[in-house]
Length: 154
Image (tube, rainbow, N blue to C red; front, top):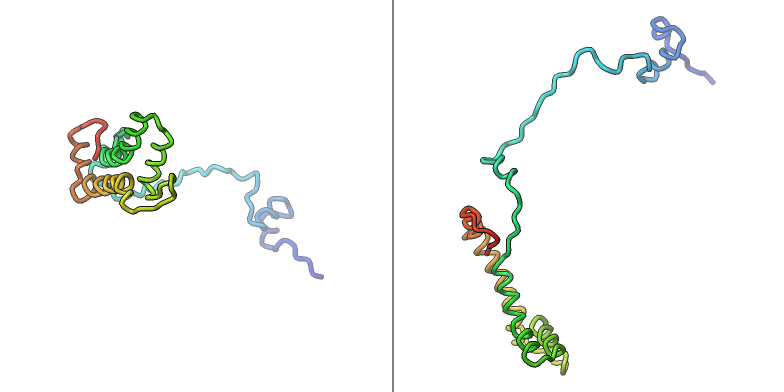
């Protein structure tokens, strides 16, 4: 079995020492200066900037209420809430709420699609209005934000 030692070129330069073995293995020795004498020049890379990017970054997030979604939810909850307040029958109000969102009436176990008109349809309509009126086609929300209208978004 042949065992390799230090190359003669390293022995000539450093002798047989720990430093020679460190150089041979490719490690930095402890005696070498960890800080270079001349600092490396840092090169900055700039990403493409958006127009008014500083203004956007410094703006704080404000709490807003999406009126279309809240309106759709309020329309779907109005009938069970009226029942609960008028008759004080909270089980019937809960059944009406389930009936409006699923079409299934727990009282007798029947299903009817027209029952969705009281719960799920107003919520979906509110979501559609929120998406298209408040979003990119009409962008009412951006106009409200530019006008500094607090708390209200469509």
